[in-house]
Length: 155
Image 1 (cartoon, rainbow, N blue to C red):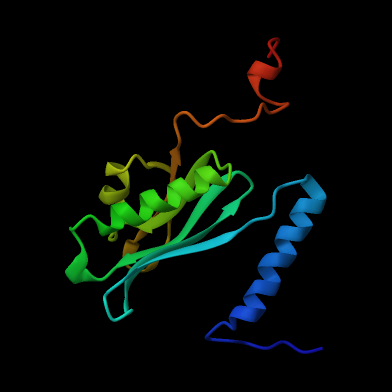
Image 2: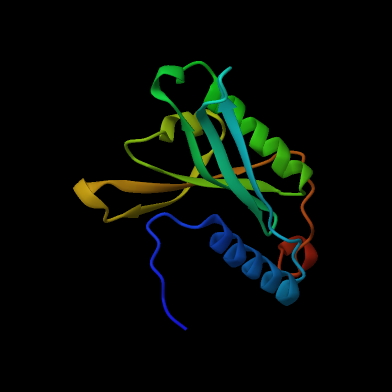
């Protein structure tokens, strides 16, 4: 065996890792398999102008990347991409979505769409901060946790 460093990740190798973790999680906790997704903004020539990627993860929708080229920002494309991803997550039985953004990126954009700061991580270059955000989805039925106060009225 050997270690192999890849600056550009081979999608086949990445898929093996993702599927392995998903399979182990399913065996260990009975979770539904995680699923990746991508929604892309394309022009008439098929060129990618933006998009959103992520995965379902144990009842949550994790947004990994959201990007719209500068000249198309402010036209509602980012909101449309995010809302489309959230709708997909709801269909996959997710209860909330989560993502992160740096202090110089898009915090007000996400807050406008209902995301709240769950945690702030400091220590990045030039005193930058990473905001870990969450959006709970109203009207989405959550399963009862054996540790929740409603499951244990005496707590």
